[in-house]
Length: 406
Image (cartoon, rainbow, N blue to C red; front, side, top):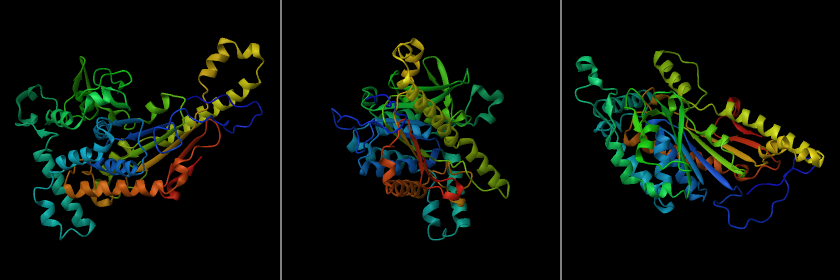
């Protein structure tokens, strides 16, 4: 549904809209809901918790896009009927969180009450994953590549081929390709270095597309798709935000961006904290930069729309004016950020610490953060002015740039 031009009076208030011919696709006044899931390995169960809370509130995505582990969660959601999605997410996360424990968590549960002790437990669990891999996901190559003379043409430390059968067992790819929900995942072309999105609007999605989005080198091998090889999209951009914002639909859109890495953090005090902070900066989303630029473009569109309404008919009918008019739909956007805040004890290994205890903690944190965000009614309220972009972050403290930004 497209909005009519802004009235010539100069006001940017949105014109009244006719009653929709069909019900909205979600329990909000928005015509489109985009759920964006960042990459972050074992942290991804946080996104599952966020989705469970959204699902309970009837806030269902019409477009879901992801990178790396976000691509896996996205595919499970898009590739299952609404009533089965939580169970399938739970099945995946319980499968992969059988790694990293091996009795370690059970043994330490009664002892690991402080951050220092818990940090050691997490490191032990992560070390177990490095040695043994993750069920249904990846396993170490034997012998390891560094023990093979000349490398043996092996390009990764782990074999991720089992992920294909895991995905095919949990995801109905026919449902994804039926386009009941728009679906996008990002990857990087190894040969060209260019970022690529696989989108069911133009592509037939297979398990390989999901695997390619999460093929982080040198841990995992590149994945071949139609003669080209792809690595994890997080090497270039760990969020699909730019892809969604650049694919203008003309629909009033609610964007829910679920990040697993925080761009903001404290100054490191030792080499361990340096390693953690490097990873956070590398994989965090550049959400503020992207939204600031999008706001600027939307303001230009609003200004042109006001000018267009005042142009003489002969100028408004020129090809140049028509081309600009096509780029100036007055759709409105709410961009809502939910960013996981890792406790200090999780450390550098938090993206590959797949223990059951930690998985459950991440899931509960996502559920709680989504609940706290949905308590603010403005999140699900349409902006008043045409072309408006409202950005909300109710999880980051105000002193760090959180809360609402209109």
